[in-house]
Image (tube, rainbow, N blue to C red; front, top):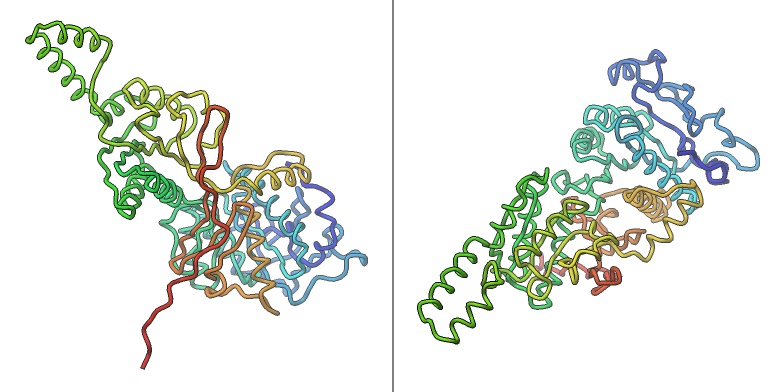
Length: 468
C-alpha cells in the first residue's frame, strides 16, 4: 500500500527524528554491522533510515545522532528542526513475512494518528518483527539503541512473549497490540480487544435480561478452551449456571454430532419415541390425535439452556447456525451470544441468528476512522488498524500529561482510562485491559445497539483502612 504524500510532508514530521520513517530493519539490509551489538543482535542487522517504501542504510547502532538528513522534508527550513525534548516511542510490527500487509496497515494507522494529533512531543522508531518470536526479540533488542521511552507492539502473542523480557530488563513499559490476556503482566499492557471481555459483557447483558441458564459451543482449540473458561467465569459472576458444553472440530468435520450432543438430541428423540409408545398403549381418540401431531416431530423437550455462546465467525458460523436450527435451537426459546466478529451483514439471512446478541466496540468513531484512512491511503484499513491508531493516540496523551511526558505505570493505569477509535479503555495493574463495549443485536434489517457502551469508568473503591 502506497504511503500518502501529504502526511509524509506535513509540518509535524520534522519533530519526529525517526518518524515512519525510521526502521530498525531485521535483515532488510545487507550492510555489515559496525558495532558488536548489531552483530550479536542478528548477523547482518543494522539500523536504517527509510523514506516510505524505500530503505537506505544511513547510520548504525553506534551513531550518536538519530536525526536523518536524507529524509525528504525532514530538514526543510519551513518545517523546523526536530524537537530535542521529544519522547521516543518504539513501534514493533510484522513488516515482512506472511503478515507484512497487516503490519504495514498498522504502521499506516500509527503514522496517521501522529499526523492527526499534530503532536511535536513524539519521535517514532519502527522495527520489523518479521511476525515471529525470534524476530520480535531481536527487534526489541535493536530499538534499545534508540533509547525509547515506550514500546508499542508487538502484534502477535508469541511475539509479545518474546519481546517482553527485553523491555522488562530495560525498564520500558510496553503497550502490546495482542488480544491474548495470557501475555499481560505488570509493564506489559494488552491493548487488543480481548474476546474474554466480550464474553463477560454479553453474558452480563443476557443475565440482566433474565437469561441464567447458559451453554457454550466452541471449537476444539486453545481459543475455544479460553472461551469456555471465560464463559464459566462470567456466568459465575452473574449467578447463572452453565448447563451444557460441547466442542467441534475447527475444520468443520463432524459438527453435526457436536450440535447433537449440545442439544441432547438423542435423549430428546428417545423421549419422543417413549411418549408415542405410551399414547399408543392408551389407544383413545385423544391419544391418537396427539400421536398424529407428534409424527412431524423429530424430538421433544426444551433445551437445558436459554442462552448459547458460539465463539465462531464466517462460513463455519453459518454452518453451525444451520445445524442449530435443525436440532431445535430457535430464537423464540434460546438467545444466541457471540463476539464482535458477528458484526457481519450476511448473518441477518440466518433464521436462527435473529435476535442474537454480541459485544463489540462502539461504531461511532469507526466509520470516521475508515473514511480518514481511505482518504489518506486510498485503501480500506484492516480491522486491527484502529489498535495502532489508538496506541499512538495514547502515547501522545501520555506525552502531553506533563512537561516531559509520563509513560509510567501510574500514568498508563489511570483509572479514568482513555478514549479512542475503539471506545473507552483502561489498563489494570496486571496489564489486562478493561473496555467499554456495547451490546448489539442482529435484527432482520441489520445490527442495532441494544445496550450502549459506557462513556466513563467508575472510580476504584476507596479503602477504609487507616494506616497507623
